[in-house]
View 1 (cartoon, rainbow, N blue to C red):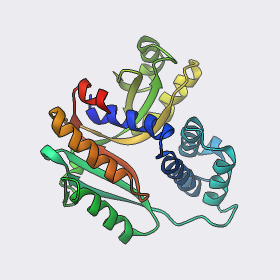
View 2: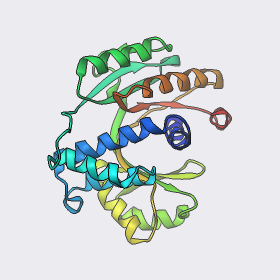
View 3: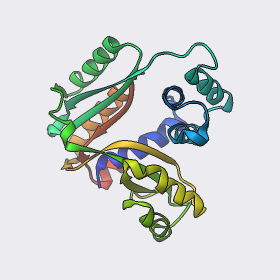
View 4: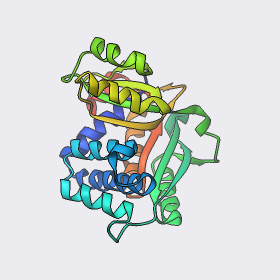
Length: 248
């Protein structure tokens, strides 16, 4: 299990209660706009939009904001930006791999902000393809421990295509093939199991263990990258001890 999975879960919870809440809301709304633009405004025919809206609602994004984002994205309301997805690759302390996913309407601005964040915080940019081969595109579903047990999750999802279930402490992480995400998520719903989020992400195929002092530097780097409004997601392949995570 990747330390990055633990970090991603922890920083999401922190963002909901601290000063980064506004940035989190903006990124979730941007996801909704893009999903609506690609697949239309009808959630029954657009599972990506459905999951984007569910994630926003669970983060307490106001319903009015969600509705306007759907309308802007689908063209029912003016004001939507033409976003494009851009991936940047890099290295962090101890040679950990970085994949930075931007959703931006200004490629030059995104490239500049990512480069500055990485190089000023102990990392370096990498050539396209030099890092991405270390990751696989997978479906990732998070279920709170308070919502279900590991056995119940396994029973509900294995036949639907779940590949593994990881215990992250307060959360269970379900890994699927990207194409099986909706089927596995639907199986959870049919079993009456609530989930926190369901996304297609880049999951590392190989993790690098790092010491606690290096982990602190990696956390600082990730926070600097994610602080950019241009950055939607950051993926890495480090693994850390529970004691390092406890300090976060």
